[in-house]
Image (cartoon, rainbow, N blue to C red; front, top):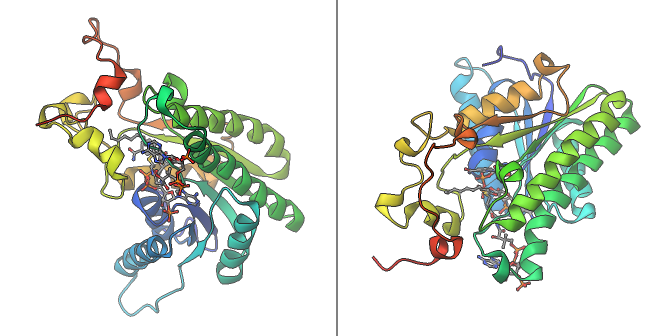
Length: 291
Ligand SMILES: CCCCCCC/C=C/C(=O)SCCNC(=O)CCNC(=O)[C@H](O)C(C)(C)COP(=O)(O)OP(=O)(O)OC[C@H]1O[C@@H](n2cnc3c(N)ncnc32)[C@H](O)[C@@H]1OP(=O)(O)O
Ligand SMILES: NC(=O)C1=CN([C@@H]2O[C@H](COP(=O)(O)OP(=O)(O)OC[C@H]3O[C@@H](n4cnc5c(N)ncnc54)[C@H](OP(=O)(O)O)[C@@H]3O)[C@@H](O)[C@H]2O)C=CC1
């Protein structure tokens, strides 16, 4: 954990910060003093994120300390550049200039590549890759116009980016694009004082995951992906641990670190067995089972 107050006076914008891992990261930034803007499509998600942040800050605050405005939500579909700019405007008018951006919003559903429609491909690639670019571009534009520094961008990726993701070709391809963008923008924007890093969560289950993804681990008690024995570290990730890594990567403690993607997965993506289990075609893995 970073020292208390490490983010005092800093405004952090987190896309998809109202649910799941985005919300957990929002809480950890706020615990360290950040003001947090939560940007996504659904105001109900914003409300959940703002409540979680306010509760965490209140719990950490000394008794009697006045409540601060620490979090706001702003509606935007990250695929639309005008909505992205309007959401930055809304967050900045409430909380001050954004200097840290976490590109966390994502879309994903299991599907065989052969059955994926062009619209389904576009929906996922546009949210994950185009959305991350549009938000990064908006932060850069504002940051440079103000002559502000330092700034930090954190792109949330996935291990599928380097292994491929059978059954998730859209998400794997988009996340690989995000990783290339992390490295590219790190170099282009270093002279502007903006660091750009990536963070890969391993298996971090939570109740906000879409039903189609939850079903992958819940469809058969003998095939539970979250079973501790299936992970080298003997457990899955806890969302606040992702928040600890995110707050480090965007902080001055990582001031010389840019273009790097950190994998937080207990070693899972490195796993190789001497004898691999029999291959089960992805089509069979995705087929609903009759119990
Ligand atoms: C082992 C367990 C854990 C595994 C974790 C693996 C790693 C996780 C990575 C993550 O990214 S988790 C984040 C996942 N979160 C979300 O996906 C939340 C947001 N999702 C959504 O909003 C939707 O699911 C969406 C479909 C991705 C996007 O919504 P949008 O409103 O833009 O799209 P639609 O108009 O509804 O559909 C667009 C397009 O996509 C086709 N489609 C939608 N769902 C499916 C599906 N389940 N299978 C196949 N195709 C689908 C839909 O038909 C449309 O296509 P066209 O009809 O236009 O061709
Ligand atoms: N959970 C896990 O085990 C893993 C997660 N990841 C990555 O971690 C990140 C967080 O995932 P997780 O918390 O599990 O997922 P969630 O499904 O809980 O969160 C996705 C978020 O993205 C937002 N979002 C989706 N589409 C859009 C859009 N078009 N515009 C704006 N916001 C959008 C949603 O908000 P709203 O509906 O309000 O728009 C939602 O808050 C993602 O980048 C994911 O790929 C990677 C590997 C594993």
